[in-house]
Picture 1 (tube, rainbow, N blue to C red):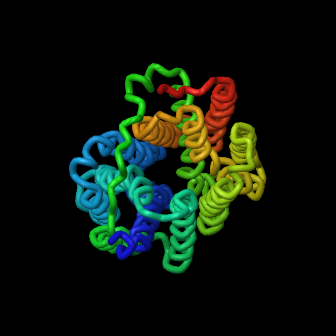
Picture 2 (cartoon, rainbow, N blue to C red):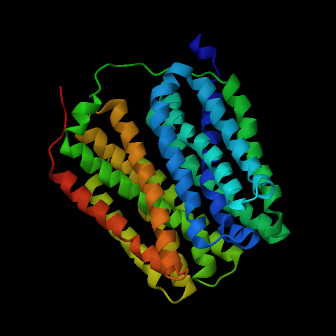
Picture 3 (cartoon, rainbow, N blue to C red):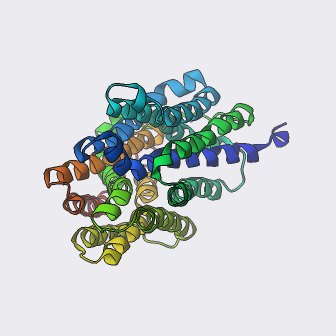
Length: 397
Protein backbone atom coordinates (compact mmCIF):
# COMPACT_ATOMS: atom_id res chain seq x y z
CA UNK A 1 0.00 0.00 0.00
CA UNK A 2 2.66 2.44 1.11
CA UNK A 3 4.75 1.65 -1.98
CA UNK A 4 1.96 2.93 -4.23
CA UNK A 5 2.02 6.37 -2.67
CA UNK A 6 3.99 9.05 -4.49
CA UNK A 7 6.28 10.38 -1.76
CA UNK A 8 8.35 12.19 -4.38
CA UNK A 9 5.41 14.57 -4.65
CA UNK A 10 5.60 15.08 -0.89
CA UNK A 11 9.32 15.85 -1.18
CA UNK A 12 8.68 18.29 -4.04
CA UNK A 13 5.94 20.05 -2.05
CA UNK A 14 8.21 20.34 0.99
CA UNK A 15 11.12 21.66 -1.08
CA UNK A 16 8.80 24.29 -2.56
CA UNK A 17 7.66 24.99 0.99
CA UNK A 18 11.21 26.04 1.86
CA UNK A 19 11.35 28.10 -1.35
CA UNK A 20 8.20 29.83 -0.07
CA UNK A 21 9.93 30.51 3.25
CA UNK A 22 12.92 31.91 1.33
CA UNK A 23 10.58 34.27 -0.55
CA UNK A 24 8.98 35.38 2.71
CA UNK A 25 12.29 36.01 4.46
CA UNK A 26 14.34 37.51 1.61
CA UNK A 27 12.07 39.43 -0.76
CA UNK A 28 10.91 42.29 1.49
CA UNK A 29 14.48 43.26 2.52
CA UNK A 30 15.20 43.95 -1.16
CA UNK A 31 12.49 46.62 -0.95
CA UNK A 32 13.53 48.32 2.29
CA UNK A 33 14.86 51.43 0.54
CA UNK A 34 11.94 51.37 -1.91
CA UNK A 35 9.46 51.34 0.97
CA UNK A 36 11.37 54.20 2.56
CA UNK A 37 11.23 56.43 -0.52
CA UNK A 38 7.72 55.46 -1.69
CA UNK A 39 5.99 55.76 1.67
CA UNK A 40 8.31 58.11 3.58
CA UNK A 41 9.35 55.52 6.16
CA UNK A 42 12.60 55.97 8.14
CA UNK A 43 15.19 53.32 8.98
CA UNK A 44 13.94 53.06 12.56
CA UNK A 45 10.52 51.91 11.30
CA UNK A 46 11.98 49.79 8.49
CA UNK A 47 13.89 47.91 11.21
CA UNK A 48 10.52 46.79 12.62
CA UNK A 49 9.76 44.77 9.45
CA UNK A 50 12.24 41.94 10.17
CA UNK A 51 11.34 42.27 13.86
CA UNK A 52 7.64 41.70 13.06
CA UNK A 53 8.49 38.84 10.71
CA UNK A 54 10.66 36.88 13.11
CA UNK A 55 8.60 37.67 16.21
CA UNK A 56 5.47 36.35 14.47
CA UNK A 57 7.34 33.26 13.29
CA UNK A 58 8.62 32.82 16.84
CA UNK A 59 5.09 32.86 18.28
CA UNK A 60 3.76 30.50 15.61
CA UNK A 61 6.63 28.07 16.23
CA UNK A 62 5.68 27.98 19.90
CA UNK A 63 1.93 27.61 19.32
CA UNK A 64 2.10 25.11 16.44
CA UNK A 65 3.87 22.55 18.63
CA UNK A 66 0.59 22.34 20.58
CA UNK A 67 -2.11 22.64 17.89
CA UNK A 68 -0.55 20.99 14.78
CA UNK A 69 -1.12 17.43 15.97
CA UNK A 70 -4.67 18.24 17.02
CA UNK A 71 -5.70 19.95 13.78
CA UNK A 72 -3.66 17.75 11.47
CA UNK A 73 -0.49 18.30 9.46
CA UNK A 74 -2.23 18.47 6.08
CA UNK A 75 -4.55 21.32 7.06
CA UNK A 76 -1.77 23.25 8.81
CA UNK A 77 0.81 22.91 6.04
CA UNK A 78 -1.74 23.85 3.37
CA UNK A 79 -2.68 26.86 5.52
CA UNK A 80 0.99 27.85 5.63
CA UNK A 81 0.96 28.24 1.85
CA UNK A 82 -2.36 30.13 1.80
CA UNK A 83 -1.16 32.56 4.49
CA UNK A 84 2.14 33.11 2.65
CA UNK A 85 0.36 33.83 -0.63
CA UNK A 86 -2.19 36.13 1.04
CA UNK A 87 0.47 38.12 2.89
CA UNK A 88 2.54 38.68 -0.25
CA UNK A 89 -0.51 39.65 -2.31
CA UNK A 90 -1.79 42.07 0.35
CA UNK A 91 1.64 43.74 0.44
CA UNK A 92 0.73 45.26 -2.93
CA UNK A 93 -2.65 46.55 -1.74
CA UNK A 94 -2.82 47.36 1.97
CA UNK A 95 -0.21 50.18 2.09
CA UNK A 96 -2.35 52.08 -0.43
CA UNK A 97 -5.67 51.31 1.27
CA UNK A 98 -4.80 52.13 4.87
CA UNK A 99 -4.26 55.70 6.10
CA UNK A 100 -0.87 54.63 7.52
CA UNK A 101 1.06 52.76 4.77
CA UNK A 102 3.49 51.25 7.28
CA UNK A 103 0.58 49.55 9.08
CA UNK A 104 -0.40 47.90 5.79
CA UNK A 105 3.15 46.61 5.33
CA UNK A 106 3.27 45.21 8.86
CA UNK A 107 -0.10 43.44 8.54
CA UNK A 108 1.04 41.79 5.30
CA UNK A 109 4.37 40.78 6.84
CA UNK A 110 2.63 39.24 9.86
CA UNK A 111 0.41 37.13 7.57
CA UNK A 112 3.21 35.64 5.51
CA UNK A 113 5.35 35.26 8.65
CA UNK A 114 2.57 33.06 10.08
CA UNK A 115 2.90 30.90 6.99
CA UNK A 116 6.67 30.84 7.35
CA UNK A 117 6.41 29.76 11.00
CA UNK A 118 4.12 26.86 10.11
CA UNK A 119 6.56 25.81 7.37
CA UNK A 120 9.43 25.75 9.85
CA UNK A 121 7.54 23.57 12.33
CA UNK A 122 5.93 21.12 9.89
CA UNK A 123 8.14 20.48 6.86
CA UNK A 124 10.94 18.54 8.56
CA UNK A 125 8.68 16.08 10.45
CA UNK A 126 6.64 15.51 7.28
CA UNK A 127 9.78 14.39 5.44
CA UNK A 128 10.99 12.45 8.49
CA UNK A 129 7.74 10.43 8.40
CA UNK A 130 8.13 9.52 4.71
CA UNK A 131 9.59 6.03 4.02
CA UNK A 132 12.74 7.28 2.26
CA UNK A 133 15.81 5.05 2.54
CA UNK A 134 18.38 7.83 2.93
CA UNK A 135 16.57 10.16 5.31
CA UNK A 136 19.71 12.07 6.28
CA UNK A 137 20.43 12.80 2.62
CA UNK A 138 16.82 13.80 2.00
CA UNK A 139 16.83 16.13 5.01
CA UNK A 140 20.06 17.76 3.86
CA UNK A 141 18.62 18.23 0.37
CA UNK A 142 15.43 19.65 1.86
CA UNK A 143 17.14 22.30 3.99
CA UNK A 144 19.43 23.41 1.17
CA UNK A 145 16.33 24.49 -0.77
CA UNK A 146 15.91 27.46 1.55
CA UNK A 147 19.34 28.72 0.46
CA UNK A 148 18.77 28.04 -3.23
CA UNK A 149 15.31 29.59 -2.94
CA UNK A 150 16.93 32.71 -1.49
CA UNK A 151 19.42 32.81 -4.38
CA UNK A 152 16.57 32.47 -6.88
CA UNK A 153 14.50 35.19 -5.21
CA UNK A 154 17.41 37.64 -5.09
CA UNK A 155 18.73 36.86 -8.59
CA UNK A 156 15.34 36.91 -10.33
CA UNK A 157 14.21 40.00 -8.41
CA UNK A 158 17.42 41.83 -9.29
CA UNK A 159 17.04 40.97 -12.98
CA UNK A 160 13.39 42.03 -12.87
CA UNK A 161 14.22 45.39 -11.27
CA UNK A 162 17.04 45.96 -13.75
CA UNK A 163 14.70 45.30 -16.68
CA UNK A 164 11.47 46.91 -15.47
CA UNK A 165 12.48 49.21 -12.59
CA UNK A 166 11.76 49.05 -8.86
CA UNK A 167 8.57 51.05 -9.41
CA UNK A 168 7.01 47.81 -10.73
CA UNK A 169 7.76 45.86 -7.54
CA UNK A 170 4.07 45.06 -7.03
CA UNK A 171 3.94 42.94 -10.19
CA UNK A 172 6.91 40.88 -9.04
CA UNK A 173 5.38 40.49 -5.58
CA UNK A 174 2.26 38.93 -7.12
CA UNK A 175 4.44 36.59 -9.19
CA UNK A 176 6.18 35.40 -6.02
CA UNK A 177 2.79 35.01 -4.31
CA UNK A 178 1.82 32.48 -7.00
CA UNK A 179 4.49 30.01 -5.76
CA UNK A 180 2.84 29.20 -2.40
CA UNK A 181 -0.62 29.49 -3.93
CA UNK A 182 0.14 26.74 -6.46
CA UNK A 183 2.02 24.66 -3.88
CA UNK A 184 -1.11 24.60 -1.73
CA UNK A 185 -2.59 22.07 -4.17
CA UNK A 186 0.52 19.88 -3.86
CA UNK A 187 0.08 19.66 -0.10
CA UNK A 188 -3.64 18.97 -0.46
CA UNK A 189 -3.01 15.95 -2.70
CA UNK A 190 0.39 14.51 -1.67
CA UNK A 191 0.71 11.64 0.85
CA UNK A 192 1.43 12.88 4.40
CA UNK A 193 2.23 10.42 7.18
CA UNK A 194 2.39 10.99 10.92
CA UNK A 195 5.57 10.68 12.93
CA UNK A 196 5.57 7.96 15.62
CA UNK A 197 5.45 9.11 19.23
CA UNK A 198 8.21 7.39 21.18
CA UNK A 199 7.29 8.55 24.70
CA UNK A 200 10.92 8.65 25.82
CA UNK A 201 11.58 12.36 25.35
CA UNK A 202 12.64 14.53 28.26
CA UNK A 203 9.91 16.72 29.69
CA UNK A 204 10.19 20.50 29.62
CA UNK A 205 10.82 20.66 33.34
CA UNK A 206 13.80 18.31 32.96
CA UNK A 207 15.21 20.35 30.09
CA UNK A 208 14.83 23.64 31.91
CA UNK A 209 16.81 22.30 34.86
CA UNK A 210 19.80 21.45 32.64
CA UNK A 211 22.49 24.19 32.34
CA UNK A 212 23.52 22.39 29.14
CA UNK A 213 20.12 23.15 27.60
CA UNK A 214 20.46 26.91 28.22
CA UNK A 215 23.94 26.87 26.69
CA UNK A 216 22.44 25.26 23.58
CA UNK A 217 19.72 27.93 23.55
CA UNK A 218 22.39 30.67 23.75
CA UNK A 219 24.42 29.19 20.88
CA UNK A 220 21.31 28.73 18.70
CA UNK A 221 20.12 32.28 19.39
CA UNK A 222 23.55 33.61 18.38
CA UNK A 223 23.48 31.44 15.24
CA UNK A 224 20.11 32.91 14.23
CA UNK A 225 21.25 36.47 14.98
CA UNK A 226 24.57 36.09 13.15
CA UNK A 227 22.78 34.77 10.06
CA UNK A 228 19.81 37.14 9.95
CA UNK A 229 21.62 40.37 10.86
CA UNK A 230 23.63 40.26 7.64
CA UNK A 231 20.98 38.52 5.50
CA UNK A 232 18.25 41.06 6.32
CA UNK A 233 20.39 44.17 5.87
CA UNK A 234 22.76 43.04 3.09
CA UNK A 235 20.78 44.69 0.28
CA UNK A 236 20.33 48.06 2.01
CA UNK A 237 23.93 47.95 3.30
CA UNK A 238 25.53 47.35 -0.09
CA UNK A 239 23.40 50.05 -1.72
CA UNK A 240 23.84 52.83 0.81
CA UNK A 241 27.05 52.19 2.71
CA UNK A 242 29.05 50.84 -0.23
CA UNK A 243 27.61 53.33 -2.78
CA UNK A 244 26.95 50.72 -5.47
CA UNK A 245 23.91 50.24 -7.72
CA UNK A 246 20.96 48.15 -6.51
CA UNK A 247 21.68 45.44 -9.10
CA UNK A 248 25.33 45.08 -8.04
CA UNK A 249 24.43 45.33 -4.36
CA UNK A 250 21.73 42.64 -4.48
CA UNK A 251 23.81 40.21 -6.53
CA UNK A 252 27.11 40.65 -4.72
CA UNK A 253 25.54 40.98 -1.26
CA UNK A 254 22.40 38.94 -0.47
CA UNK A 255 22.65 36.63 -3.49
CA UNK A 256 26.23 35.53 -2.86
CA UNK A 257 25.47 35.38 0.87
CA UNK A 258 22.68 32.84 0.25
CA UNK A 259 24.67 30.86 -2.36
CA UNK A 260 27.70 30.50 -0.10
CA UNK A 261 25.44 29.53 2.82
CA UNK A 262 23.91 26.80 0.65
CA UNK A 263 27.36 25.53 -0.39
CA UNK A 264 28.45 25.53 3.25
CA UNK A 265 25.44 23.41 4.25
CA UNK A 266 25.98 20.91 1.45
CA UNK A 267 29.66 20.56 2.41
CA UNK A 268 28.65 20.12 6.05
CA UNK A 269 26.15 17.42 5.07
CA UNK A 270 28.78 15.48 3.12
CA UNK A 271 31.69 15.94 5.53
CA UNK A 272 29.94 15.93 8.90
CA UNK A 273 31.26 12.46 9.76
CA UNK A 274 34.87 13.58 9.27
CA UNK A 275 34.70 17.00 10.94
CA UNK A 276 35.37 17.88 14.55
CA UNK A 277 32.15 19.82 14.82
CA UNK A 278 33.11 21.95 17.82
CA UNK A 279 36.32 23.10 16.12
CA UNK A 280 34.43 23.77 12.89
CA UNK A 281 31.85 25.87 14.77
CA UNK A 282 34.59 27.89 16.49
CA UNK A 283 36.41 28.41 13.17
CA UNK A 284 33.18 29.55 11.50
CA UNK A 285 32.50 31.90 14.41
CA UNK A 286 35.94 33.49 14.00
CA UNK A 287 35.40 33.82 10.23
CA UNK A 288 31.94 35.31 10.82
CA UNK A 289 33.26 37.94 13.23
CA UNK A 290 36.01 38.80 10.74
CA UNK A 291 33.40 39.15 7.97
CA UNK A 292 31.25 41.53 10.05
CA UNK A 293 34.29 43.66 10.89
CA UNK A 294 35.40 43.68 7.24
CA UNK A 295 31.97 44.74 5.99
CA UNK A 296 31.62 47.48 8.63
CA UNK A 297 35.13 48.93 8.43
CA UNK A 298 35.95 48.61 4.72
CA UNK A 299 36.37 51.77 2.65
CA UNK A 300 36.57 49.92 -0.68
CA UNK A 301 33.17 48.64 -1.93
CA UNK A 302 34.70 45.38 -3.22
CA UNK A 303 36.17 44.56 0.21
CA UNK A 304 32.91 45.35 2.00
CA UNK A 305 30.92 43.23 -0.43
CA UNK A 306 33.37 40.34 -0.01
CA UNK A 307 32.88 40.49 3.75
CA UNK A 308 29.11 40.49 3.30
CA UNK A 309 29.15 37.50 0.93
CA UNK A 310 31.68 35.40 2.87
CA UNK A 311 29.57 35.88 5.97
CA UNK A 312 27.05 33.54 4.29
CA UNK A 313 29.62 30.73 4.16
CA UNK A 314 30.61 31.31 7.78
CA UNK A 315 27.05 31.08 9.15
CA UNK A 316 25.98 28.08 7.05
CA UNK A 317 27.15 25.47 9.56
CA UNK A 318 25.94 27.29 12.68
CA UNK A 319 22.25 26.32 12.72
CA UNK A 320 22.59 22.63 11.66
CA UNK A 321 25.82 22.35 13.67
CA UNK A 322 24.06 23.44 16.86
CA UNK A 323 21.32 20.87 16.25
CA UNK A 324 23.95 18.15 15.79
CA UNK A 325 25.70 19.13 19.02
CA UNK A 326 22.34 19.11 20.82
CA UNK A 327 21.57 15.61 19.48
CA UNK A 328 24.92 14.33 20.70
CA UNK A 329 24.94 16.08 24.07
CA UNK A 330 21.28 15.54 24.92
CA UNK A 331 20.03 12.51 22.94
CA UNK A 332 16.77 12.23 24.90
CA UNK A 333 15.89 15.91 24.40
CA UNK A 334 13.19 14.99 21.89
CA UNK A 335 10.64 17.26 20.26
CA UNK A 336 10.58 19.75 23.12
CA UNK A 337 14.32 20.41 22.84
CA UNK A 338 14.26 20.88 19.07
CA UNK A 339 11.18 23.10 19.25
CA UNK A 340 12.89 25.36 21.77
CA UNK A 341 16.10 25.42 19.73
CA UNK A 342 14.04 26.61 16.74
CA UNK A 343 12.44 29.25 18.97
CA UNK A 344 15.89 30.35 20.15
CA UNK A 345 17.10 30.66 16.57
CA UNK A 346 14.06 32.72 15.64
CA UNK A 347 14.51 34.90 18.72
CA UNK A 348 18.08 35.63 17.66
CA UNK A 349 16.92 36.33 14.13
CA UNK A 350 14.37 38.77 15.56
CA UNK A 351 16.70 40.67 17.86
CA UNK A 352 19.75 40.78 15.58
CA UNK A 353 18.39 42.69 12.55
CA UNK A 354 16.31 44.97 14.81
CA UNK A 355 19.41 45.85 16.81
CA UNK A 356 21.39 46.59 13.64
CA UNK A 357 18.61 48.82 12.28
CA UNK A 358 18.00 50.59 15.57
CA UNK A 359 21.67 51.37 16.19
CA UNK A 360 22.11 52.43 12.57
CA UNK A 361 19.21 54.86 12.98
CA UNK A 362 20.71 56.40 16.12
CA UNK A 363 24.01 56.74 14.23
CA UNK A 364 22.36 58.91 11.58
CA UNK A 365 21.49 56.08 9.18
CA UNK A 366 25.02 54.61 9.17
CA UNK A 367 24.49 50.88 8.57
CA UNK A 368 28.20 50.13 8.97
CA UNK A 369 27.94 51.15 12.64
CA UNK A 370 24.97 48.84 13.16
CA UNK A 371 26.70 45.89 11.48
CA UNK A 372 29.83 46.38 13.60
CA UNK A 373 27.79 45.77 16.76
CA UNK A 374 26.54 42.46 15.29
CA UNK A 375 30.11 41.13 15.68
CA UNK A 376 29.02 40.31 19.24
CA UNK A 377 26.84 37.41 18.01
CA UNK A 378 29.57 35.16 16.53
CA UNK A 379 31.84 36.01 19.47
CA UNK A 380 29.15 34.84 21.92
CA UNK A 381 28.62 31.73 19.79
CA UNK A 382 32.35 30.91 20.07
CA UNK A 383 32.18 31.35 23.85
CA UNK A 384 29.10 29.13 24.14
CA UNK A 385 30.58 26.42 21.89
CA UNK A 386 33.75 26.28 24.01
CA UNK A 387 31.63 25.86 27.15
CA UNK A 388 29.53 23.16 25.45
CA UNK A 389 32.69 21.25 24.62
CA UNK A 390 33.55 21.15 28.34
CA UNK A 391 30.05 20.18 29.50
CA UNK A 392 29.16 16.49 29.94
CA UNK A 393 26.09 15.19 28.16
CA UNK A 394 22.63 15.83 29.56
CA UNK A 395 21.22 12.37 28.96
CA UNK A 396 18.47 11.40 31.41
CA UNK A 397 17.30 7.86 31.39
